[in-house]
Amino acid sequence: MDAHSMMMKRLAVVFGLACGITFSLGSRAQQADGPRYMNGTSLIRPTDYREWTFLSSGLGMTYEPPGSSSPASPSFGNVFVNPSSSRSFMQTGRWPDGTVFILEIRKSNSEASINKAGRFQTDLVSIEAEVKDSRFPDGWAFFLFGAAPSMRSAAEPLSGDRVTSCVECHTKNTAVERTFVQFYPTLLDVARQKGTLKPGF
Image (spheres, rainbow, N blue to C red):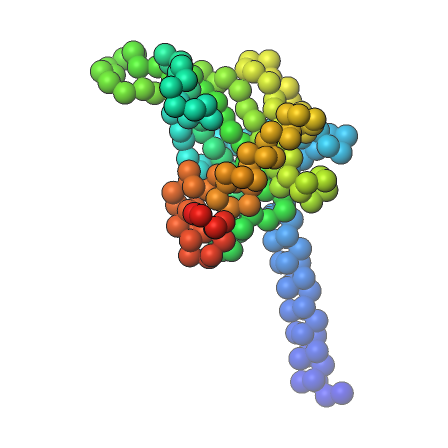
């Protein structure tokens, strides 16, 4: 083998190793913001979720029928998703395994400082999570971390009647898979473009 052939072979090996390392690091980075569990199934509450991708905020949203009494101070519901899953959805219109949604509930107020109208967010009330993970029987799991300020640092997936009602609602009423993309305007456009909306949306 001449010197040129040997050099080309070495370059090919180095290039192959570099590609392998890059792919490995990329895969790890993609999973770094996914769900973390204690004892296999207890979801550890993400402490940095407010640095994740913000999807939308709703004020006073409810599943109750029209005419039901509404609280004098409606709550805000803020929805966040882990960044790697957000990037994947933007490319495919679908949620990858390892997607974590956080629903943050906060109180609202209208009287403070210079504010004269409208409502703004105040104290944290509770945090909920929805996770897409093929290790769970249904492929999705729901978690409640309790009320602030004493909410749990880890939560077991909902079970029994509580999870049944979640699954039924998220199966019947969501626009993409088990998620309320119809309330996330930028993602709704993506789902339309990718053709991943459920019939009726």
